[in-house]
Length: 263
Image 1 (tube, rainbow, N blue to C red):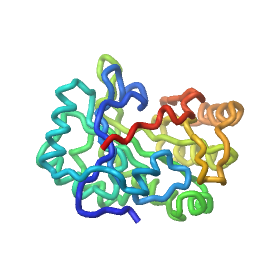
Image 2 (image 1 turned 90 degrees about the vertical axis):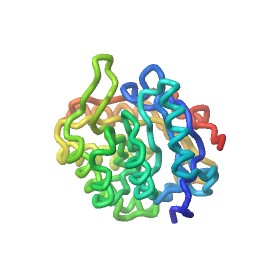
Image 3 (image 1 turned 60 degrees about the vertical axis):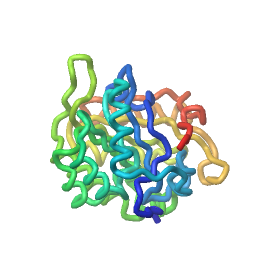
Image 4 (image 1 turned 120 degrees about the horizontal axis):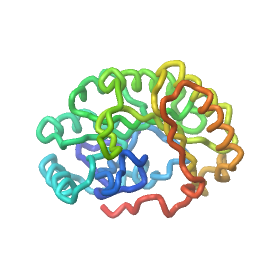
């Protein structure tokens, strides 16, 4: 399913300014967008690279060279996007060269055992928690077990990075921020997801994403999020045990924020 073919295939390498403010900062996050994915979300905004596997094959040395180039440009961190299916290759790369600050940016459909191999190599985890509803997960992402798998994965991430550490300028240096994409018409899934996160990871930081952008090939989700839907989920989050809640403008639901896949 993940389309893995033995290479580190990458669709884009460059500065990225659309992560949470303490990750992007002022100079951007140095993102490495891997091709392929171990999920099949029908609404994926990156479907051209996650499902179709567009991109360029890199050797370890070639990718390390590109990472060093990004660092020389002053990015705040090196951000590995959709790395779950390449976790073994990523570990091998980081044992050869470890950037100053590393980010593991994931759907959280990760095996906890695989994540243990990254202990000491990853500074910041940015996992999604997409679904509390297993039936909805099966319908939209072909993964009935996503809720339980993701919870176990996030628990391992917190074992490795139990406390968020910020620099004097507000940059995240170590820790975990859990993201939740609010899907239009499925508020119960979002409300329950936040309650589960609050119960399991008291005091964690969450990011409420409003960026869902409809795709012509996903008729199940034909529209963007309504302001009242986002407000409802946000007010729920405010009542729960989160230490920090990041919010996103509804204007983020636009194709203009989807990166250009230039590799």
